[in-house]
Length: 287
Image 1: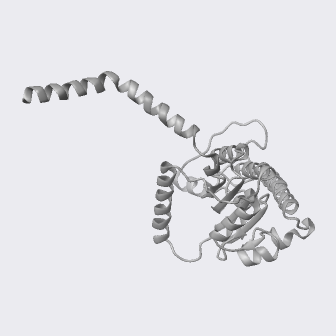
Image 2: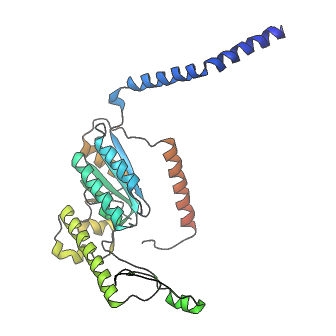
Image 3: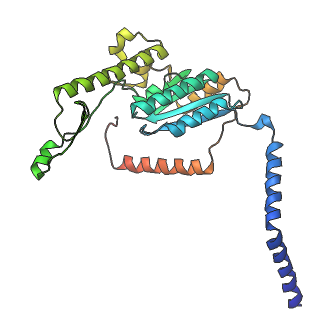
């Protein structure tokens, strides 16, 4: 009896071992058929992308925005922003990507906590900009900074050795005091970037560039004040922003594209990190 039982088990295991590739192939084909037979009317028609944290490398988010631009099933995009800004180049890349996306379909930018400097720059071409009543908005300005460690180096006996060609090659170094011609050149770079920032914001938001001191002197504003001076269109919560993009997209039955399990896990880790960081700091927080 037991011999027959184990013989039967062995036959089953042998079949699985001999045909596992075929079984996996059949499962894969079944999955493909299920995908092809999926009702297109049940596919997601709205998407949300997040711009969170400092902007240093925008390549992944830019790619996501371009993919959404080409996806005809997605009728509108909500850009969820909580960022103090960051490097100028990546911020401009994001601005251009949002501008291109907004030409193809409605985009709403929502300032959840901080929509400042580079992250505000990235949002200016959204069809509608909304911010949380407690959000910080603005900080339209440009800076270039570096420490001067020369006094410390003198104390511990470190001397710099360098060979350069071109009097501006060491411009911006942190190993010594900047010379006057270097400061003037750096100021020229900052002024040029500042003028570009002001021009782009003025054009996108319909503001008078000659009145830039009202909105573009590096100041942060609460959402209500930002709306008053024209930096945003409305003040509200996250659900309000979702309703706005649903209305602008003219979808009859809103179906939001859900993040993958991996993306959800990353978001959970990010939220836990923010909670931990918040627990060890206090007071009014802004960048």
